[in-house]
Image 1: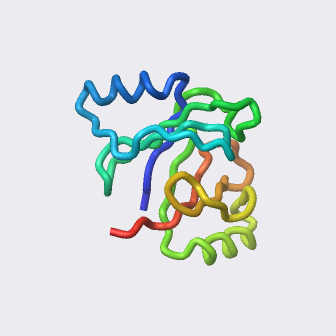
Image 2: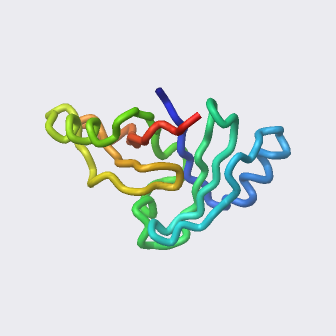
Length: 128
């Protein structure tokens, strides 16, 4: 199940304001996450059509070198530990790091082996 699409923007507050003017609802207001050097907000329907918008606020951010625009597709799973273990053991996936706390749930990133894009985020399913 696709949980959200993440988009890197240059000016988060301006982008959020413009999207709100078009009727797209802000569901999680912008919040600074110093541990990853980003300011992050979520827009859209709570259970579908969600966008994660983020602005890099530190040159040490893992997304600092990424271009603006679509950054990753987040896929929700019931058991993130099982998904991480299975994908880490498979030659089909390049798992990037361990499970960690994200802005919305526990997450890890991965790509299909041999590809640069798209980048995927594996995230725990949200309750409700």
